[in-house]
Amino acid sequence: MSVLIIPLIVLAAVLIILIASLSTLAFVVKQQTVAIIERFGKYQTTATAGFHLKLPWGIDRIAARIQLRLLQTEMTVETKTADNVFVTMNIATQYRVNEDSIKDAYYKLINPGEQIKAYIEDAIRSAVPKLILDDVFEKKDEIALEVQKTVAEEMQTYGYIIVKTLITKVEPDAEVKQSMNDINAAQRKQDAAQMLANANKIQVVTAAEAEAEKDRLRGVGIAEQRKAIVDGLAQQITEIKKVGVDLDEEQIMSILLTNQYLDTLNQFADRGNSTIFLPGGAQGADELRTQIMTALAGAKK
Image 1: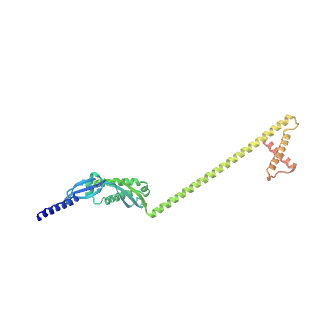
Image 2: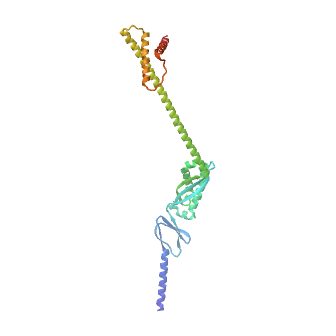
Image 3: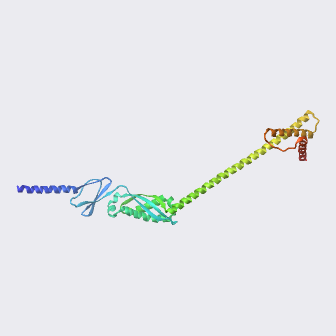
């Protein structure tokens, strides 16, 4: 009986050892991940996604599982511009492990995110002090591209690829920011005042031009009216002469001017409440006629 128990104990021990070995013999690597396998502390191989076997009992061990997906690190850098303005810049960098340099990515760097931040800080503090504050805002993308190029060259030797570097925010000192806002507000007020002045100028010039055109047209109208009156008088003199009335030109002109005078009075009367000062009575009309005839006679000389 005792002879049978010993083999059973040995068999059970072997089974237990085999079962325990299975947990250290097989392993699975997830998608977009690789596993660094070491044998007695020395790099052995890199296991990609899928099911794998390794030597049990600690001979082979999984030293690390490394993500192949895109990673991102964010940081804030404070630096000074060429015009002595301190600015705070928020920077986001996207990076990933180079699949051809996985061994270097694991063994050459302990903390790649912190290393990338250090390189970015150095690159930013080398690029921004060459620019004034306005240029930092305008050339934000150019600065990011320059930083990305510099950091990518450094990280390439460690097995990392810098995919994109973005400057997401540029924040100057609070007092400088307020001063910039005040300057912009003053500039906008100045532009608004200038535009209002130009609008008023255009309005005044347009009104003056309209008034000048109105006066010109009024003058043309008066001139045409006077010409029509003169032409009418000349025509009436000609018609009176054709009739054979025994009157000279001066007498005919006197009659016509008297008629014109009376017509003018009628026109003023038709306009309603108008005040006009003219010589009264027949004598006054005669004096007015005499003055007009004298003026005409003087014009002929």
